[in-house]
Image 1 (tube, rainbow, N blue to C red):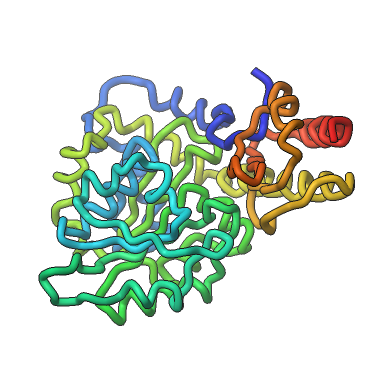
Image 2: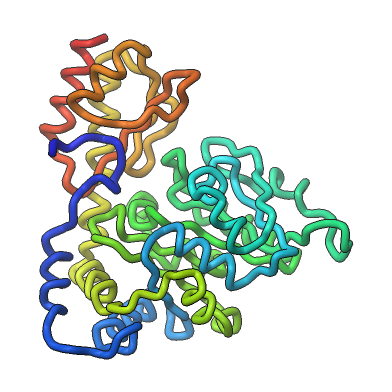
Length: 340
């Protein structure tokens, strides 16, 4: 199958990840995470984020978000997020179904929410007729390809903590954010006031499996039971752990994300050179958003598949991946230039 720009989920698995899975595929070990490979992988997370960190591996990003949010909420709570957030738009209501919580979507600007925008949703505390605000959830990278700065995250965290709330980060593309910011993960998560993190790897060269990271072990008394109930406990967990071993080894996560981000910037540069395409978002990670004439979209999709982000405006989203090549970019832009 040819490479396109639909999603970094559409890319294959990095060879080093596959090799690590194969290396783990020897002999018998205890299932459900009580094995040396999983323990070593969790140790790498603790090295990255601190020894007091609690880590739980799950199958996928939705599972990570559901487990994280279910751990720290009751059904009478509410979760505040951007109106573009993955938990609001793209998870088929799973967070609401499994947590029982009400999602409160905040109008976002370029995918981000701010303390000022959040403030108007912070009411009804201790009033039994209102759902009780408990968590603010932000996406890093956002659904529109933008990246929160450390200062922006700290401001939202401070607001949450002033109201005895928690800050959750959906880090499906956290590696791309780290590269964009030029910072280690800890600097814009734990050190910035994030309380719980969905740490993604699938979009950056892994086969499957994400991690839920809690920076306060006091929150996780029941997490292992919730993970089992929510069908996210992987019996042969060593094969998730093995992927993270390769992912952190020699900073493979950074190599992959750096390349994806670089390809997005190249795509942005080359498509602007045509003078025929208007970009709608600033390219900060590995996503490019643009407006195209409606009639050329199907013709482009025949050769390089991608998704339409907004049907009414013909806004499209182009995602680059760890395996995107420069020739992919140049060929795509030549076709755009030819068709418009």
